[in-house]
Length: 225
Image (tube, rainbow, N blue to C red):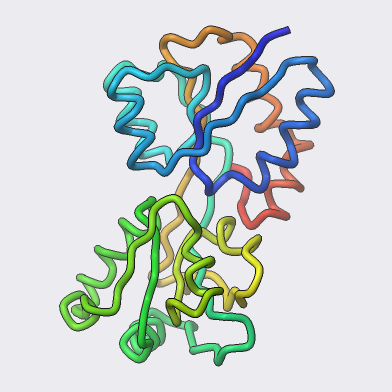
């Protein structure tokens, strides 16, 4: 039996936390999980830190694959960006890109993460032509859910992956971004080139991609990839 070290971002956390104990019971392998924000993860892995498996956005994983840090890529889940307000607060209209633009302009404060959703939103607000107007009321967080900031009343409007907003207490998730401005992020698992337990890591990937895992992934706000 092997000890598998996994480094991953929080977007896949809820589904992963439910699935991994089942994997451990079924196989006898032990999984050690390191939760690291995407930006820090890239720095640590490019700096030479080795694990068995890496799970993060497919775009970032592809960057690691090109650098020879990971040697295999398996897409495991995909997630859209959601919008949240503090529990009980008025829910702005987010039925179209124009409606979201109005909601962001009207909000006193807006929060998003440094992960893939945050990177996308920076570009989206620039394309909408509102980046400069809202600059003073934007907060970008790393290492904690954007929803937590909304729950504390420190931001009126929060944006993050649906899978990261749903488990946060004290907020109302209004829904996903509308189709005309939605960005779907694929999350992928990559085998580290210096993995100590490659076969066990591959078995974990296979488990996460199995049809039996799909209902758990859906329940946690994502879709199987």
